[in-house]
Image (tube, rainbow, N blue to C red; front, top):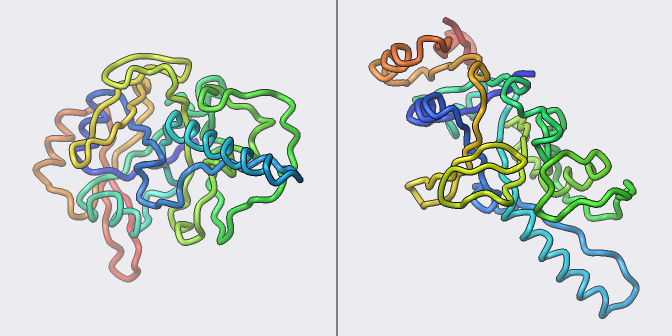
Length: 256
């Protein structure tokens, strides 16, 4: 199972050098709708309903602050994705083997890649759950995938406005509870280094992946040739491809 990550060229070098890839908190996503919203418990008592709303709000905050999300896509040739996430075609796309990277492991991922397909819709689902949650999970502290809570995970982390459907997004979610916020540490989700992104000092939780998980790098049509040459020289074991523009169609192709 291979998926793709659009990034800038400096990010390619950082990822390949460190052997780590960043998981973001949803509070830093560019869409304010894209955050976990827990459903309040249904009750016929107006007073109890108020407290149910408060509990749901608290749960949403716990999920949001303790869950890191890696956003991926099914395609390496989406022109909008190149423009929006790969530095206006000056960046690159990483092809990642999800199995080799450990992102399909149900014991280390709260949402593994094989369950991470995003649902696009115009209306948020707020009705009663169909699933019976007869297996308990810790709010903001669940490291493994719990199939019986999959409907809940879909509503919390895998539902986005229809406008984003062009992304064909697949997500991997990891629990961040127990990690050192200022350095390298480990929890049940894996080995992680927390770094600060300079633009707004947002934390990025960079989880380690094994050698061989990055299958290839596709550099954009506007990528700096000198930087691409350096990339090839420094990482000779990685296959580096080049994105090209189709002469007759508004399409991007990838070639060696």
